[in-house]
Amino acid sequence: MFNSLSDHLTATFKNLRGKGRLSESDINSTIRDIRLALIDADVATPVVREFTGRVRERALGAEVSAALNPGQQVVKIVNEELIAILGGQTRELAMAKRPPTVIMLAGLQGSGKTTFAGKLARHLRDKGHFPVLVAADLQRPNAVTQLEVVAERAGVPCFAPERGNIGGHDSATTEGTQSYGDPVWVAQAGVGQAKVRQYDVVIVDTAGRLAVDENLMQQAADIRAAIEPDEVLFVIDAMIGQAAIETALAFQKGVDFTGVVLSKLDGDARGGAALSVASVTGRPIMFSSIGEQTKDIEVFHPDRMASRILDMGDVLTLIEQAEKAFDRKQAAEMARKFMDEEDFTFDDFLQQMSAIKKMGNLKSLMGMMPGMSGMKEQLANLDEREFDRVEAMVRSMTPFERTHPKQINGSRRARIAGGSGVSVSEVNQLLERFGQAQKMMRQLRRGGGMPGMPGMPG
Ligand code: GDP
Image 1 (tube, rainbow, N blue to C red):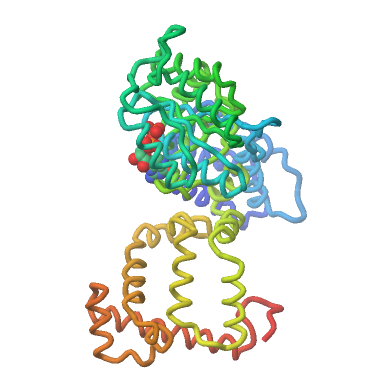
Image 2 (cartoon, rainbow, N blue to C red; image 1 turned 45 degrees about the horizontal axis):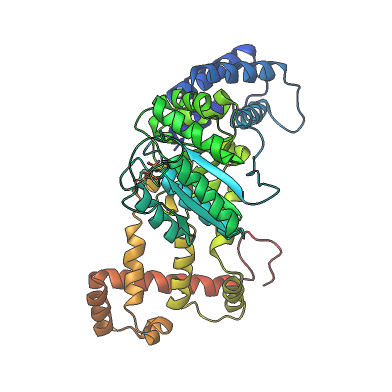
């Protein structure tokens, strides 16, 4: 996501490099390029107008800075204005003073609500909360089952209406006839149960339709009125382009939401429309959803997203992901091995592979590294299955072989190839690369510390 916007903007800034002074016409042509980049990325027209207006005004009035050259100064202004349209400060979830905190999800069908419910539950569970999911989407036949599956994956309970009672009607029930088919009732009962059972966060999934319609809005508004949520999160599929703005405005009018979740940010759509949602509705983007798995969730930080778009990297998020994946003990053990000159074995290798996998989608990880925009093509061609093949080969080795790779002779190689479904030449390649890596690590140790890391003891 945002690749082409990012490419466009970085190319624009390249033109400014090395200029001692920026003339008004330099600034005007830069603004023109920025405008085209934003329009091309699908950013909403009023947002483009406001953004470029402010950048132009600030660039023209910019004081001569001792620290930054004029080009860098423009980048700084664009960065700050980008942070502003993305909502400025990071906005945390508002937790209720008296639990449970009630979070309602709203959005179109297919926007990624149910998937996000699981991600949010897991995210909160990891932070020490006790969340529960409530299935108040009684519209789509499989929605309840899907939420139950999602809950199980996230390791949290799910309150769902009994089967057979799901009527699939709108919430047009009158007093006394409420049944499990009424989403308002289900939502209310779910929140009630969470209170009784002392869960501290309730996440209520609601029904979506393929397009905005009045019944849907009314139902969502009724649920909102009944459960009085602390947060109403509007989930929007970043791939739907300009329709995002219209949809967001309709939901704002119909239900009113307190925050936005951008889903499917892992896709390769242009994404600018989604970026405009915060600016157009005045509601902050709070999370992004970046894949189909439960772990694929990120807290949205406007400043980090701006850095990513401007290809300044997002090292902070990268570090957080790494901290989540690497167990401290494991990391200490690796460091000890390194210092004690023990050889790196295939067992260590497997451990590292699994940590990298836990960090999530490799392509999105690489995208967070500064200066990666020049390597997008290689990234696009990166085949994650390659990692699975390597893992399969290592798993086909015996414990002896994993710690004594040099002893893996021809017949052992053939057995490993057979066991992991690859060719012998692939096994040969792996062993060769592994031998080189071992050698390199030895050299690093002998050479006194890691290259480029001053201060490391030798
Ligand atoms: P709902 O109708 O709003 O509840 O949407 P779902 O949660 O069922 O999601 C619709 C489809 O989008 C499913 O196939 C999901 O697997 C997929 N999906 C949801 N979130 C993401 C995401 O962040 N990235 C990608 N690539 N797919 C997603």
